Length: 256
Image (tube, rainbow, N blue to C red; front, side):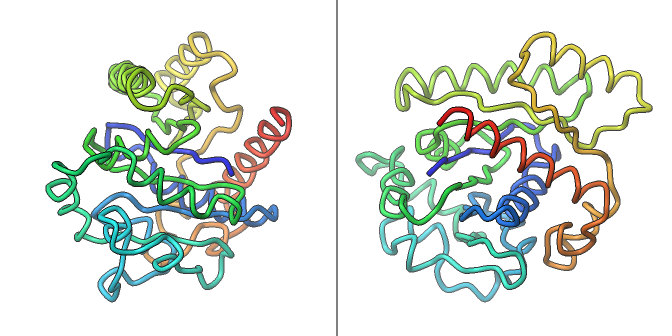
């Protein structure tokens, strides 16, 4: 089981879009996928077609120890992956976990119970460095960083790399950066091309070859509660995420 934390402290870079579409794409290639929504906004939950306001149990109940992952997980109707859903209840986890022993490892312990059931677990992290994000980084094997190719993105990236180093030192010594994913990419934009070149220059093969383009279908699909792959498989966005899934599976196979 490969656990990937999909994170960036900067909001609006395509984390949730990546989680939902990558989950659907990996499932298309036959992988058993669990998507864990760790954001109280629950966007990955609704984007996967699950009505978050109707949920009795969520990832919150797993983190506080009331439920197991198996109790709470739901299967998506059309996309063939599983979701550990979230809603605003999760906002309370911060306060409730703060005095708990082993508070940073709650998610890691919960995921250990399902390690034989999935090939990939994708953790959709909130755009903040809080206790829930630390739980994700402690549970993960590696980090995927979605980012836009713009000036401020590079500043945020150095902060995130420092955070990953701290987690590695104190909580998860094997945590590594799996890859940087260039999202909302517009090849006509000179700045985007320059930042992209800087990333490749600095991080080398840590930068995924796949580029996720700006694509209206990717933006529309969540309002219909489905990944772009189901909404419009022929769209450039859906095809890009299929290509990314293929790249990730190939990397994983090469490691094994």
